[in-house]
Image (cartoon, rainbow, N blue to C red; front, side, top):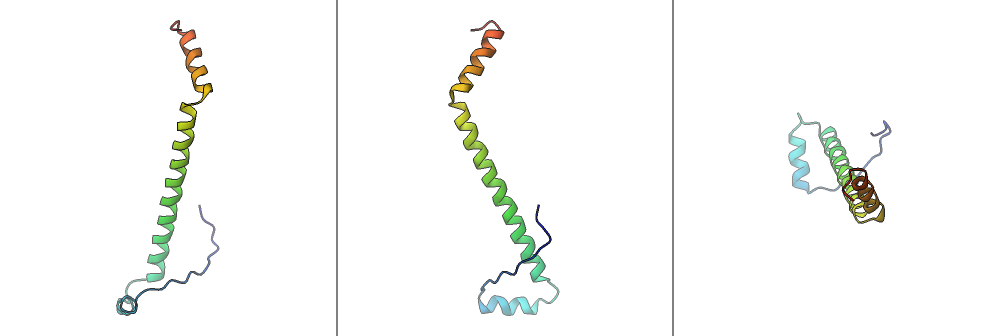
Length: 80
């Protein structure tokens, strides 16, 4: 989904948090933060795509073409 090119992102965090992070030398913060950002971007992209699909489906339900398709189906089944 994403290319292998990387960009730098600067964030600001409280001094106390930075100090605590520095004491936790066994944690690769850069990698952890990268994973969190990538996962959030994926979730948001999925959410927006789903919202768009719901919007399109809603418009299709209310369209004249939907009515025509249903009438055609009914006519073929002898229910018109």
